Image 1 (cartoon, helix red, strand yellow):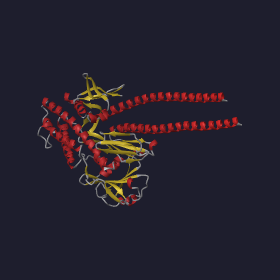
Image 2 (cartoon, one colour; image 1 turned 45 degrees about the vertical axis):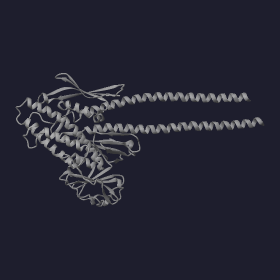
Image 3 (cartoon, one colour; image 1 turned 135 degrees about the vertical axis):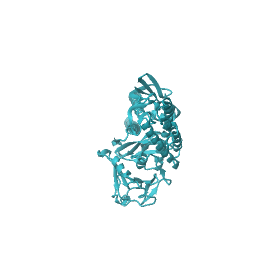
Image 4 (cartoon, one colour; image 1 turned 90 degrees about the vertical axis):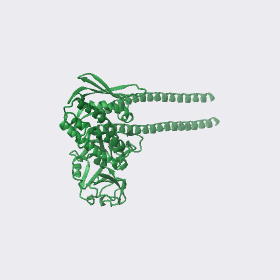
Length: 371
Length: 160
């Protein structure tokens, strides 16, 4: 009887022991799996960001081309794009993987949730090539253009759309904002007021977009003074995001990269930060071109038979001044604008225009030009 | 009865011992596998970086041969700019490190005369491997006369 009781206790003890040991082993493996899942999630995010970085590099150097990036596996994740104090950053929300960049100007919505991205690269010239602006958007962003902007709207639609629907940006021209049809919550909407009259601070949101979440409706307005103002939806009214309009710094060519850049980013501080990156690059490049100018001076000194050439480079023949002086002014202003983008940066447009005309004269009359 | 219990206990200890031995084997196998995978990944990253750096170098505004407002000449480096870029890369080292990272960029002209020029050189304090990538380029040097073109290689070496 005594033996039987002892046996019963032992059997019970064995079961308890098996149970505890089993639970510990199970817990160990559950912990291991959970840890591995989080590691592989982070690794996947890091891989995606690294691949995106390579794709962005490739897309950026392919001037005037549009590319499609399938983000299939990340369709439910949100990509973010930021830029502050000259440092651009993009990554996946909620995951530690991200990449930073102080050189390239990437213009994109602050948050982008889409199964595919459209990348579009445009060279920024002041007057020589400074950098390639990369625009990032998706087919989930719908753009409405209102106004004509002296033909800008028509040309922009021509460039943004494509025969291939996958890389065609969803853009539509409307006569007035009331024409915008009722939108759904699955898209982001961006109004582009190219004449600067349709959207203003505290003006009403178009009826078709009133029921959409505030974060999904933004606008940009180009004033007649060649400035840009950013807006976002706040209830039924437009809220101005930059009290001080930002000057557009570009040579105003057909595809005006600075203007287009303002279309693709929805935050004025990100726009300014990316433009400042471009000015920093312009500052460095001006120094490179100043070095080249010295070689041009030497060349024309050794070969004096080329009429006005030396005058264009370092003399006083053209109304525009000379290359040397304009290059110094361009470099100095670019240096300042890389730190603060304000109205004084408009001078960059003047110096670039002058250098462009001097270069055209050099190309026409001389064997060697600046760029 | 005591002896039986002792045998039981020994059995249990033996089972636990074997179990932990198996776990140890699994862990050793897993860590070795991870080590190999890490090395493979590192190699893959270096190769990807080499491609990125050479792509960026070939299209760098500091190097490329421009033709006024027209499209720049492809696979061509303007030596009048390259000579000055080398100084700029050194002066603004921190910014250009963002583009090239740890790398050495050399221009090796083979025609008409042979010369080598290092335009960017940033080696890590300690490195295990160096991955060189070569690209054939034309080298426009108008300081020597209008439309004077040399021929050579752009060599990008990345370190890890």
